[in-house]
Image: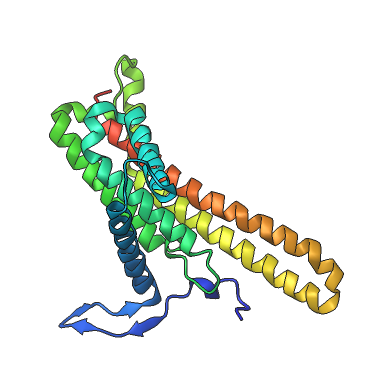
Length: 245
């Protein structure tokens, strides 16, 4: 029984491992992240082997996810971004599994830790910058200086755009982390209140359980929504690296 709402986010050391000066110890965070990654691979392998001309229910789900991310990327980047579709599909699936796995009782929410969300955001940010320099050369600098701007406004605009561009990985990582953290804390507090009401007055706890159930379904939706927002923002940022302003 967890009494502190923040206990569910505590990283616990499972197996201490060290190679020379490199710490590769296993924690509940790393173990669950690896388990979910292998689970995604196994599910995809099994379902791929079962695909038929007339799709079954699981095949429809997988194809719907594929089309959802593909259409998202096509709207943002056009044909030039299709080569990066596997990356966005992977990160969408990974974040979705991270978010939903955290709703399993006594589980752990990998995406509620900023070290995970910020690392994902920063790695894609650096990759998109490299792609932008490779694809657009000096035209990539147009992201800081849009065309047809008054000359007197350019210095201020360049500073603002540069600051906004530099903060992209921070805002991207914090948004996912904060939503997952807040949602699970709210669920914990409401569930604890329901248990307390059940010990005091059982009838009063019935509508409270209904509220907790509704919040739980809302968190399911938010888990999908946050994976979508993370992916579509990556698509928008990729557009800046492929198309000159």
